[in-house]
View 1 (cartoon, rainbow, N blue to C red):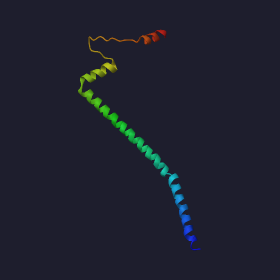
View 2 (view 1 turned 90 degrees about the horizontal axis):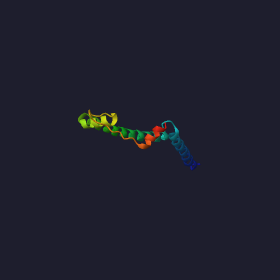
View 3 (view 1 turned 135 degrees about the vertical axis):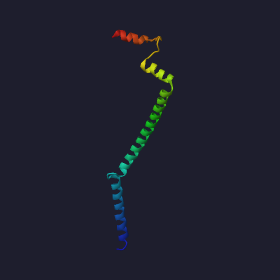
Length: 104
């Protein structure tokens, strides 16, 4: 009879351990959720890094805009199509594009 007590205790301990393990994995805020949160943290850290790089690029562009008239002029020419007084602009039209517009 004495030998069944340690065996029974070991069996109950094993069942308890299994229940605790399963419960800790599947319950709310369990190990399953911890894995999801770790992935979310990795994603947020990457997004944060991307935003910092974008902010640095914007700071450099702002510095160029504030300190360089040539940069401002190049932006005005490229993005707004502005020209200096008495300047002539030549626009080259692709022959294929010209054919496409004449068909319409």
